[in-house]
Image (tube, rainbow, N blue to C red; front, side, top):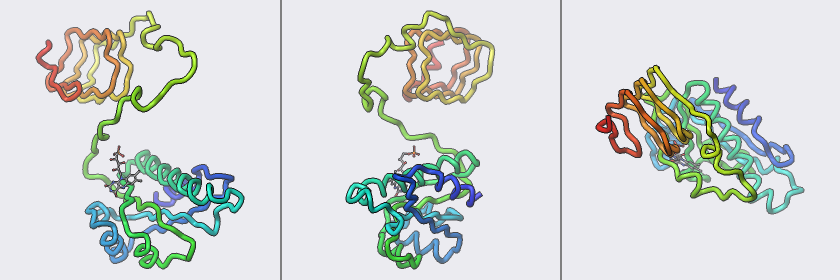
Length: 223
Ligand SMILES: Cc1cc2nc3c(=O)[nH]c(=O)nc-3n(C[C@H](O)[C@H](O)[C@H](O)COP(=O)(O)O)c2cc1C
């Protein structure tokens, strides 16, 4: 599984495909403990059975991109590799966390890194004891400008009636879902959560909603 994670990492894009990265994969308890001590003693680093230390390898970075390659692409290349590790870990049922808060020089020393290697992230990997929900995100319209001629919002343009009927969706988390004009009837939505969804013109009939929250507010009393 760990090799699969590294495979995912090396399939990340890199400027000019120069692949200027190196990975230290640490299982050894004593080494993990020393890494933990140099990374603000963040508990998950001690608990996780494997730490992947992702480094920029300046010996492999392309000279042709000059300062931009050095200061920007090398960070982007390795960040893409880290993200691939996180996504693959989730896909494989593993838990993972990106840690950026550590002392570079101490890590270089602990792992006896070749010169030119700069640690940029520690990824802790293991089996999670629970599945955390993602912290709240800013709304799309706050972080994105859509430039050009856009059709009227897709959801408002549709005239088709969409329905969700007769099903058990208890505990479902809706996140960034367009429910514009949807009719929901005879559905169990108990303990569900709705974040950043378009609920305009949503109609709900005869549904079980106990414990259901919208933006943290209990809406079970609505029915
Ligand atoms: C560059 C970077 C550094 C991070 N460093 C840490 C860290 O040192 N400790 C930690 O617990 N999480 C760290 N994180 C994880 C973020 O806290 C986390 O991604 C964010 O809170 C959003 O949560 P989510 O990824 O679970 O959706 C880091 C994330 C990034 C991208």
